[in-house]
Amino acid sequence: MIARLRIAPAPARVAVGELDRHLARCRRREEPAEVLVATIRGAGERTRIRVLTCFRLTDSVEARRTRSGVEVVAVFDGGDLDRDALERRLLAAAGGCESRLGWARFPDDGPTLDALLEAAR
Image (cartoon, rainbow, N blue to C red; front, top):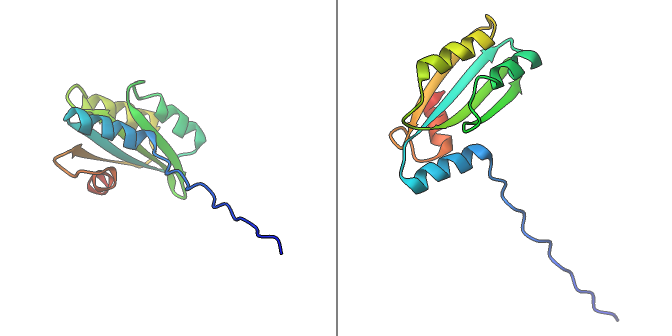
């Protein structure tokens, strides 16, 4: 009888997204971060793309389609962000769609991205 060796597959890598990386950089530098969750009801693909143009290259942003529209999640370095200006740009890009914006601050509102997203929602 021939012995067969089974080679176990390599462990799956845990995918770490850009939002998590951004927060990790802030944690490592012991700097604050701002987290935004924007829900835009009734938004389609064009609105999603318009909304993405509201952010700086240094911001970490994800805009996902949902059943009811678009959800935008973003992480910013704390300190130099003008929340009011960003909110005005987002609402203008939403083009009259019903929008809700929520904010959280790292580390005050939570230590992890999940906790910050929950606080902002």
